[in-house]
Length: 106
Length: 122
Image 1 (cartoon, chains in turn blue, orange):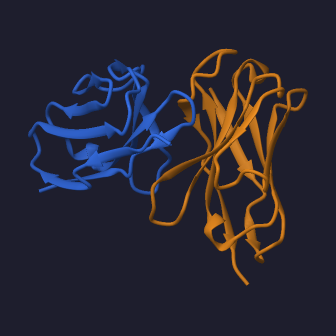
Image 2: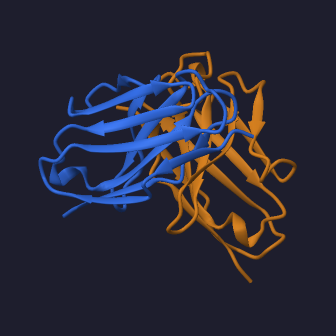
Image 3: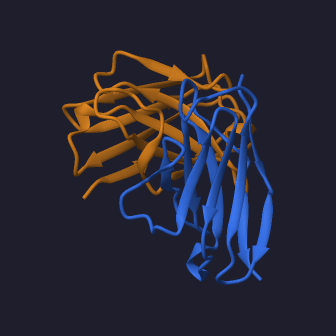
């Protein structure tokens, strides 16, 4: 089975900082990767699919890149409302989530 | 607007059964695959099962294969999850989630319900 590994597991950054989260697949998955944001006590929200396509309504400070085994979610300027746990998810064959990255404000 | 409303959760003893439902509205239910995804308390997300738009194709996570059955009733815009032989490790919030693709299953999710909590405990 393909495993999805996220790093770091948590991070603390200041408002306005550029934040980068990494997701690595144990085997190549081309661009079949989605990113979700889950705010505390809320349901997950789709941010990006196809590794780099921004879902409708998602702020442009979010971006995704990568292909094959290595993927990145970037928040260009961290905002207070971005406090959440972020999950990557393989979207070909059996959906598999990464372990999550908790983002906090310093 | 798209709405997914789960029901049927509760406290159940190990080895017993439970049936979850998910009522859908705001989209053409019969044109989309629908999934169950669960989240144990304080833990990450785990995909559980998917049923194709017409109910003909079903796939399961290894952790629930042989114990859980997903089904749908397109005439009632409702998704179901029959859970048998429940274990403590099945304790989680269970979400139904709409697949992004129309007819074709793309295996990622653009709308989620609020979830229903299943607690397996003696």
